[in-house]
Length: 308
Image 1 (spheres, rainbow, N blue to C red):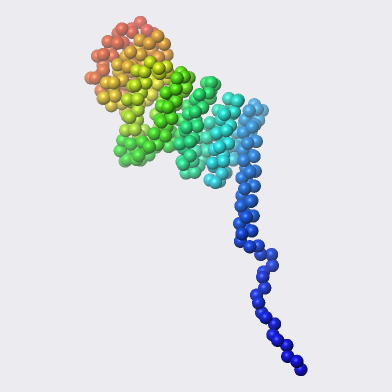
Image 2 (image 1 turned 45 degrees about the vertical axis):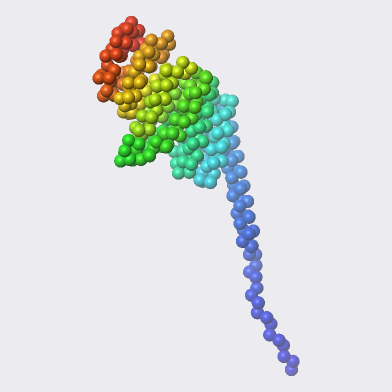
């Protein structure tokens, strides 16, 4: 009888098992397609903002997307909102600016690294000729200030190092105020006033550093939006961010503006003096007498009469 050699017992390859590289490629392709689909949903919703009949539906869709979006898709969403805020229609611009703050509020950890670009983008929109868009910029800056300018009061006058966050706001705002356009200067100044007003935990030391630059602008004949900048002084005073030296420098400028030919500037100057009188402990001793003398000279101005 002939003997047969035993069969080799090599392990057989499991059926239908894809190599790891293939699985990774398929997963990557699936993620890419999902991102493309999500972007299309966002763009479709943004396009509906321009139509009055679909405006609210679009807002609802976009807010749902924002609430459910993954951290990886945040940059793509932000870029879509940047683009739509340059849309020709004011309604689209205004809503896109507001939605930027909604994204930040819903995904604060994921958006913190994008804050510099978000703030700079909002401030660029103050160049828009539509007053409603400028108002939306101001409100957006206020919302971001309330969210990011809050900290631990045990960190001293700077509230745990919030000075670096303040710089993200004030650098582009002062740059905008340097443009030779009254509308842009005014929009940036009103944004700064809103930033100070809405800060949840005002970083006093960082805010105090604003005073010398504000004083220079008030004395600069090329700065045309003094009526919009004076509310910054009022708001800084209310949070206790105007020290004795700053008060001494600001008062002569404000006194001079009480004699401006522009009634809005005169009224803003009177409002600033009122805030300083209420909130600055040094006002009476350092500037009371001179202020009373200036007010007496303006006693027939109905815009100043209330303060007197």
